[in-house]
Length: 125
Image (cartoon, rainbow, N blue to C red; front, side, top):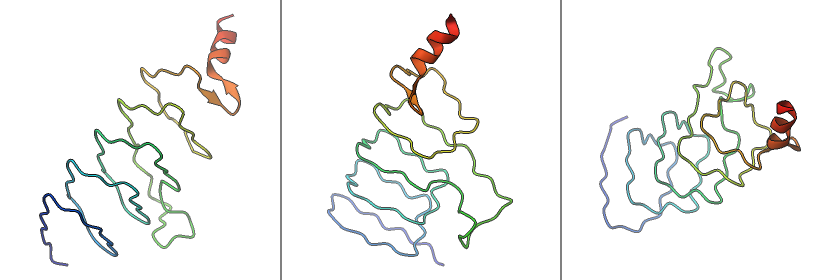
């Protein structure tokens, strides 16, 4: 596959990309509302200074056993969320094994119906 570079400035376009390789692309000062990305390898994706209100992340991780790209020997590298506001967000059916929260504000954090604040207050007693 030949690599081409397309440079667009001050444009308003709608793109439908199928079977594309967009490695090392850079998007700066763009509006990408209502973008949908499916069946994509976003390894090493770096999103900075973005407004993600209403965004939905689902089925994130390594391909499941019934997927053609499944490889039982592969392990997903860790993700990093840094200096972000995830208040009022909801995580449903996530594998949070070995997740580390560092310098995080957790007031009102509830895990499976249990308030973390009340859990810590019981531990302090």
